[in-house]
Length: 306
View 1 (spheres, rainbow, N blue to C red):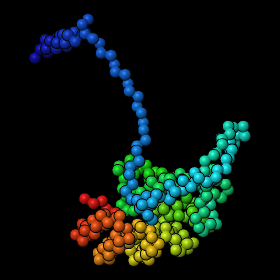
View 2: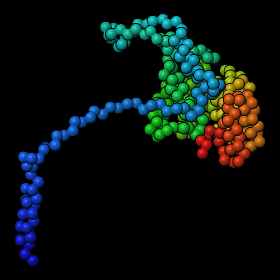
View 3: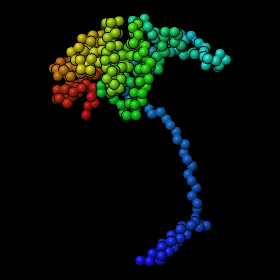
View 4: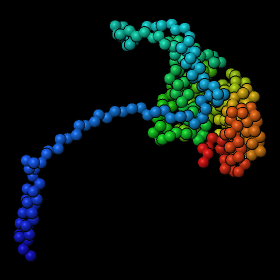
């Protein structure tokens, strides 16, 4: 077969096609559209799944109360260098109270308000702010986040905080304030599936706290539901009872959850009925929980209803 005529024909067709697409005087050359600038914005913080104040759902969380107290407390202004290694660096005036805790040798809450932490003290303003948000999503298991990106952001921040708190909490004379934060951090790290070490670590911190303050409602609450959600159901009961007797609202739900795990449906429903009497504003959700437990549709107080 002679390919030369076919090749010539093909080249001629391409040339004609190319020429036919050349712009004429009447054609308007399209101008490129201006490039819109990319604006990055922080995603909005999504709503919490759990009440921010587990002791009393109708009251603001402890963090917000502390914010108000810090604002109302007297402020002792302090001047520091922006670069401590350079005496001639710009001076900064600190004039806003922060949350300051002792690192050691304190067996009860000793949070104070000051513009700067001194020796043997730690500024926990950002830590407490973060915990306030994280507790609303990861206090119990399973945790609740709107996206993997949101969860990853919280997880990365929690890792950084644990790196700060754990070395302080491991000291034999670590303060109550350090240990309670370290216990919460490890407890929520366990809920976030960050590693098997965090469950035992949270319990060890909680037990050290309990030795300091055996009747502390907050410690008993965290230790109680931590044991329960870790599988130690019977061991959790006395601690949850102490918290319930002290008026910790969420302890009632944790106790009902504990009984569900133990397959004691009657005790779970009785606990919820007593909860409904004590907290009538929760009647609607409590009735729903009871109905779902009775019908076998609910296996965890914290699961999302379908």
